[in-house]
Length: 316
Ligand SMILES: *[C@@H]1O[C@H](CO)[C@@H](O)[C@H](O)[C@H]1NC(C)=O
Ligand SMILES: *[C@@H]1O[C@H](CO)[C@@H](O)[C@H](O)[C@H]1NC(C)=O
Ligand SMILES: *[C@@H]1O[C@H](CO)[C@@H](O)[C@H](O)[C@H]1NC(C)=O
Ligand SMILES: *[C@@H]1O[C@H](CO)[C@@H](O)[C@H](O)[C@H]1NC(C)=O
Ligand SMILES: *[C@@H]1O[C@H](CO)[C@@H](O)[C@H](O)[C@H]1NC(C)=O
Ligand SMILES: *[C@@H]1O[C@H](CO)[C@@H](O)[C@H](O)[C@H]1NC(C)=O
Ligand SMILES: *[C@@H]1O[C@H](CO)[C@@H](O)[C@H](O)[C@H]1NC(C)=O
Ligand SMILES: *[C@@H]1O[C@H](CO)[C@@H](O)[C@H](O)[C@H]1NC(C)=O
Image (tube, rainbow, N blue to C red; front, side, top):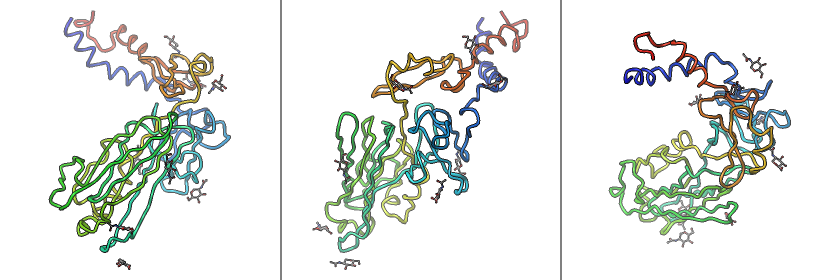
């Protein structure tokens, strides 16, 4: 009995993989005749490439693949909207990050000042993002809005000597400050300010710096991250995305529409508005597209009972 149990656990992943391979329709990604990829980014329906091409559910899910970039880049809406998408999952997508910064001259005058704001028309920023401020004489304010109204929060990066700044990856408020943002924002802006115009810390920190990005992707490297020469800007650009939650607009009533979710799926309403479909347990595929989700479980059962992996000695 025990041996049987252990064997089942051991072979389960293999049978599942086989099931997937044997069923080409489990890989229905986009609508028929619509591109499934842009460069190496997969574009699953309800997202679809091209405006009014019938590839996306509606205009909020329309994306553009711009092949003048090598490799091609995917954008939410048009290229001009300038929101580059790195990846799309069943509930989220990740986009390119931008940051606010303010740099000072030795005498305390501002040499560079860049505030940042971003607005999404149909989706919201995920709670998985954190607001991070880098600097030794800086406070930054993030302001945003969601259905409930306005939101604002601030974070303060303070230190007096370079030696006080730890480089153990933590962001404790000394040179680096991190805080959460609420769920459901569809807009935010970031501004930076300084207490003493960096005049006391200028030798090792002449800029303040603030951004929103996926938790865990930014690891603070101490004083290295307090000057632009340390490469922190490029690192954030390349490794810290912003996570966006996507839903289909609507409510519980949409779930009961026959067109909402396909076979072997369930429809669920998302807190904050909208709904999504998901494959039932043991099924795989795109729950928004025909033929619906396909049963890996059925295939697994078949293999189990046809004694595919078990020798007679161990099989009950
Ligand atoms: C997969 O689905 C497409 C479209 O729904 C259909 O034309 C095709 O015959 C299916 N292939 C298999 C192997 O079921
Ligand atoms: C896509 O390609 C880029 C650059 O070629 C690479 O950095 C990135 O890791 C790739 N992403 C995936 C999901 O393969
Ligand atoms: C692709 O991007 C380039 C550079 O930003 C832009 O000039 C061009 O119009 C874009 N093409 C499309 C199809 O959006
Ligand atoms: C401050 O320094 C900058 C750059 O060195 C210089 O251009 C500016 O004139 C200075 N301003 C004052 C008030 O000294
Ligand atoms: C920043 O966002 C807040 C909240 O939505 C808004 O009241 C404010 O006008 C925005 N500031 C700028 C400069 O756009
Ligand atoms: C910082 O600079 C601003 C404008 O450049 C100036 O108005 C302010 O007085 C300065 N503050 C300090 C503490 O030097
Ligand atoms: C959701 O339901 C509303 C009202 O019944 C309808 O107008 C809308 O088109 C539906 N959305 C989808 C995606 O079917
Ligand atoms: C959905 O699941 C049932 C068993 O629960 C199966 O008979 C049916 O073929 C599945 N539909 C599709 C499209 O895979």
